[in-house]
Length: 606
Image 1 (tube, rainbow, N blue to C red):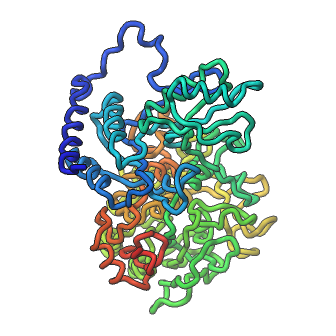
Image 2 (tube, rainbow, N blue to C red):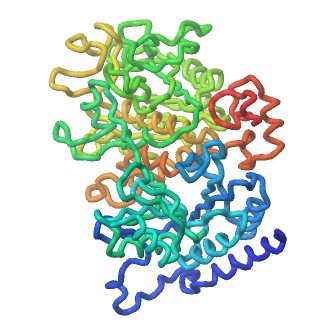
């Protein structure tokens, strides 16, 4: 095949596609013909005797290359040339590389999901593109992607058919031959009686869908459908005994709350993440590093209230109780049949003890202690910090410590303050720190939570069940003393606990894509917030709830994972990535980690 000619054809095809609907290109919705609303949906599948509408994804298609075509074939080059001409990204989605029966296990990336990001493609355009690509001898199959509530779904070149009882296999074979839809490749498929697997003659997914729908309506057919890839989720409900009281993670209406006023943690835990972990630095009065229910990185931790800094960041006085409770919100060990669950599944904690509180929780720290604690984030490789405190006056030393670490790639979160003031407290008011206010289990702003236009978003901050110093060293000396919980089942309150909810979400987001910058993390969290209680606070951004309630599931689900093989972060996989691997070989550096599993080893070259 002449691949230069093919590239030209692809460019011409794109121009044709973009011009298929001029009203769409102008941003005008196409007119609906009279009676159109009564017609069957353009795309549908049968389930039992019901037509189920399918929603076409206008930004993606799926391709399967022929089995004997290597991954670096001219086919890929031609499609990438088309993508460059269109000025849209081309992505290989590795999640769909693991193959069922139709794809050989040793050949995991025969299937490509092309991210077109084409705002002006219409359904007609997608059909034309799929039809053109299906003619390519290097491509075994090209098909559409359909959207569902739980993610993408797409069909393959195969159709599954089940006949009614009493129907002979020869009758089915005659039907398939008469309709010219394909070749029967398996009978009694999957061990199911009268179940047939048919390989379509067509390499076009739209035609496979129509053929399956046509077969379904035949008298001798019990059902027929394409062999689908479907999205799903497990929605982990952890076995931590206190999880049912953690409405901020999963609100089922417990204790008078409103269902789903939460950060959607179980849904987020089901979203795929890279093998790299992330670390949150707790800037507070110390964290009990040996608490049995905290995911603490015992290699690190310091007490910055002494000069020079010493210790491991643990509490040193009876008043040091706050940090351990904050830490549990971020990263209590989840699904370990003990205590509570933390937001950040697989996230590690490090403590920077920066102040010594009095019995009422007040403190008078040295500015240097706080600034040194902030800068410590770079020493321990923390990607996130949490500051659940407010200061009575600002400090340039502290402010620039936040800015310098932000510029170095650390994202910061702080409590908006508990004074019911119409302004956000310092340091949450800084441009390099995300300010987090508090809501209760009904979605209303906590009456103590500070407000203002510096507020970024809100998180759960009332009746928060979390870790406590063990025994009688913490807040609770009654039953279950290792956790902050009262006899009536209520927990602790404060924007101090809303902020670590946000920090935990950010840490999860950085496990999903460790190449996100601090601004990208904050922007993604803002963009995916739930506009909480708009009937009370108005629609959109407001000074009471900021952009809304943080949503872990939406933030992760709307973020692409980094490209496997891209070891240097330039969104391409090429020879320069081998140099990055060799330069960082044997380290845990992000640069060089081509498979994003946390270490740079020989596998990153392959």
